[in-house]
Amino acid sequence: MADYTLELAHLYGDLMNTYGDYGNIIALRYYAKQIGVDVDDRLVSLNEDFDPKAYDFVLFGGGQDYEETIVANDLKAKADGLKEYIENDGPLLAVCGGFQLLGHYMEMADGTKVDGIGVMDHYTTNMTDDQVKTLNGSRLTGNIVIKNNETGEEYHGFENHQGRTFLGKGEKALGTVTTGQGNNGMDKTEGVIYHNVYGSYFHGPIFTRNGNLAKRVLATALSRKYPDINWQAKLNQVPTETF
Ligand code: GLN
Image (cartoon, rainbow, N blue to C red; front, top):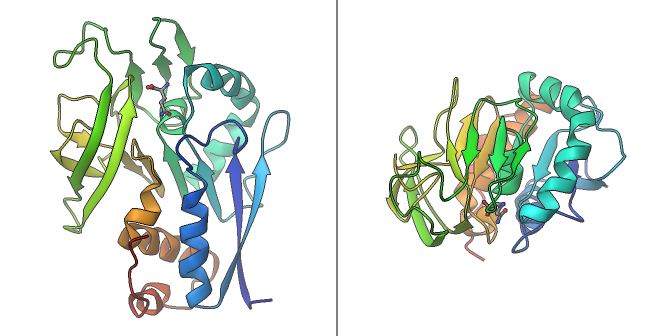
């Protein structure tokens, strides 16, 4: 057993795992292992409590409209815990449907409005909404490249969503779109950063293809739990892999 351990909650990993979002955990564990850290992951699904004090990292993956409606119902009971976790700077990666449900609402392709938990200020319209001025009626699908304006890092991925997300108060984009569509195909934003929440439409999964981001988020999680160690410096010694 390693001296350091991160406890990870995989929210609805049995329902929300489009295109292998679980691979994000494998990538985190890979980098953690190089610096002597274990990652324990636990599935937290329907009718189970989410204890905000029990976890050092949360993964909330993507799912299609149908799974999202089931999850949205159950998520209400976890909203207070998630809000506390997020406001206390808990690190969280939310992909696609997970990203959508942390906001106020998302509209399904058929126009039905599904409530999110509103712990973040974004909202998601559907692909035929009046606000959608470009590619109205089409899914946003394909390869995507974005650049984070603060670090200058470039992230590569694949997007496939009908929902159009618009960021709100206190939310910054994960990156500016250079190739592809991003949150809504209109404003060049992709994903979100809010406290230590990283949201994105990248499937595939984002951490395996973008080891620099995986290491950055891992350092954030470790520094929050074990503040006396310079984790970023340790991780800088570990080569960044593209799997
Ligand atoms: N319902 C969502 C959409 O198509 C989610 C897609 C996903 O998670 N891949 O907008």
